[in-house]
Length: 135
Image 1 (spheres, rainbow, N blue to C red):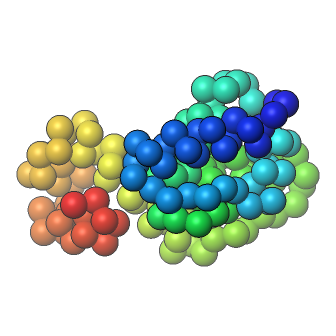
Image 2 (image 1 turned 180 degrees about the horizontal axis):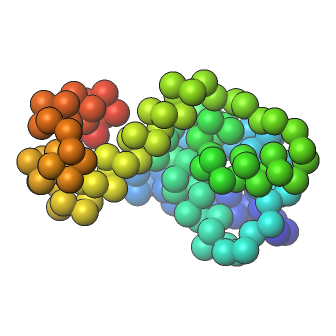
């Protein structure tokens, strides 16, 4: 994809405004991954990747910890190298946060329904909402 950096900067600016974030750019590693990725979904897929990445970061520069795992896996399978940029705990936390966000949307932000949907106690859901700053 040509002009990846220009598009990434545009979407970062757009989602900074929408999500009330302060992301200043992307790391060289992320730019390399984005440039090497085969964009089957074209620009819409890149836009979704940037939105996803901003959801898992607060400020500074996006790094590989913020990227969806399928991008890292595709780079891994293309280069036959093992890329491990996050601890297992970080990866699990990111995944859990995404699942909770999705469940909240599905249940229209009703805490009781969301806790039932996730099959966890309501108090546990409150704890996780606070942990992931989703309150």
